[in-house]
Amino acid sequence: MIAQEQRETVISLHRLGKHKKKIARLLGIDVKTVKSIVKNGCGVQPKPRSDKIVLDEPLLRKVFSRCEGYMQRVHEVLNEEYGIPIGYSTLTRRIREMGLGENASTRSYHVDDVAGEEMQHDTSPYKVKIGGKETSVIGSGLYLRYSKMRYVWFYRRFNRFIMKCFMDEALRFFGYGARTCVIDNTSLAIWYGTGQRAVFAPEMVNFSKNYGFEWKAHEVGHSDRKAGVERSFWTVETNFFPGRTFADIEDLNAQAFEWATQRYAKRPQAKTGLIPLQTFEAEKPYLVKLPEYVSFPCQEHHRSLDDYGYAAFDGNYYWAPEYTKDAQKIKEVKIIEYAKIIVLHYKNTEPLRYCLPKDGVRNERFTPDGVKPAYQPRNRKKSSGEEEKALRGMGKTVSDYVDMVKTKNSGIHYPHHFLRELYLLLRKMAQPLLEQTIERALKYRVNTIEAIARIAAACLKPNTGTLPEIEVSHDYMEREAYQKGRFCDEPGLDTLESIFNRDGSDPQNPEKE
Picture 1 (cartoon, rainbow, N blue to C red):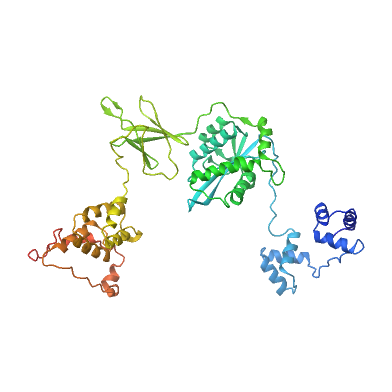
Picture 2: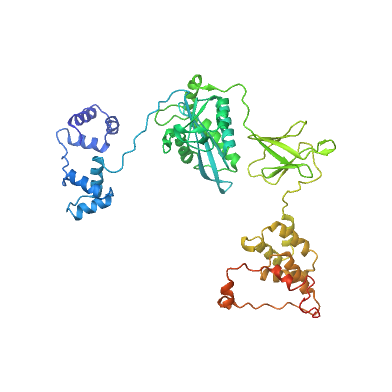
């Protein structure tokens, strides 16, 4: 109910020519209330509300305890046993006013915003449409609490090494860092324990010392302790992703970098009106300036070179010069991985640097500029694209069979290898034999090269003509023998080798041709 003094204030402001909406904003009341006061004047008081139902507080506490706090059951007991026709919303309001039920969430403690004192880091998974395909990515964010500056980057996967690379890139971009970095209880940084009792991994402690900050984990269930970075992720979902398209993950990160460090950093904040970029300039004297030289995060790998001098790393192949020592080729190489490059180290030789390829590049070989090795990597996966194209040019029947081979339920574990062998077999056949063989293989879903060869050999036998059709009876599942052995593995076509030899003869009756 509006007090009389407030009603008089509304009338006075209205007589001074203030708009009704402005009066409502100044006094914090609804504009409809202002219109009603202006229309009726100060003398008309609204009818005070009188509760029709008076609840006995001891009775309500007794029923609440009896029903173990289940509100719907409390409402039923009051209506059925005590004859009190109270509304459900009124009941829940009265229980809240009495302090029963769930305790209201309260702030555990208050932390003041101190310049240069705190930054926050966290990660969040997203489903983003990249290149027209929905892709899972992990967003990593660093947030300077006082100035509200933020740095956002997206990864396919996230581990301890990537976490260090992200922190390095973000702090190098800012050039400064806060004295404390608040994180959740992630095992990427914590050795054991949680919250104030957390013991951080020595590797991560040594990493943070290089940049002049310390890790700090919030208590379990108190994610609002790093509400700034949590809010950043909400802003990413509601302001960055909508209406944007991404060709690849590099394009996604390029747009995220520009959005976080330029567009959003120059925008006034909703509550305070502060501009992060300007506040960051004022905060710099209180932040920890990065040392002139800080080593980049790295991790070590060991690889064996194949016979042609290639080392496999992350799905690709990197060529190394065939240095020799005591007439023996070097077979082992040490690879140092950084955020964007890898370095190959030999014994007593100059290291060889390679830039890491774009995200999603696999099964490619990389060599130094101006070097073209004569051989391909030994274990490089070979595509069957040319063989598949040649097979489809052999006719519709062969093309339909290729489609069957590439289906998931074809039973062929390595379709590329199968198609290459199939091409080598079919190019030796005449067109009539080829069509007859593949037509039968397609009909019975033959999935081994050996079985296809036996079909072709049977078609070549003299005085045979076309192979007889096999009549399959579907009542075999009702037979007693099938019921007993229905859980056994089904035999493949390769078991026919025990019945027919590769030349098509019958071992049970060798005289029969």
